[in-house]
Length: 65
Image (cartoon, rainbow, N blue to C red; front, side, top):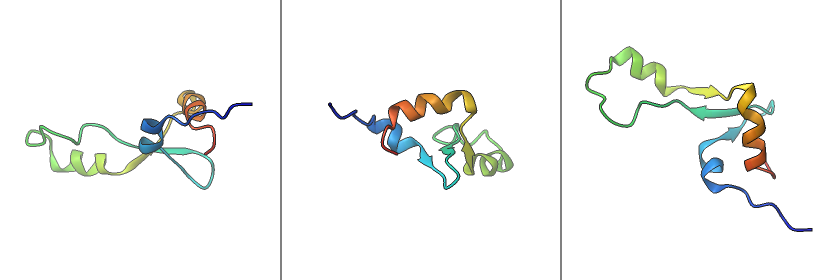
């Protein structure tokens, strides 16, 4: 039986936590930062947990993690 390929772009964007959930980076922190407030940018810096509806898609893309 063939091995399933890991989708590399997904493996770089998501990490699995010890409890089995997936963490991700929040968006809107790449460019056009001058008009965004400091409090907003600080809030975005923290990691976030992937929603339950998207976990199955990520598990399909990361078969061996």
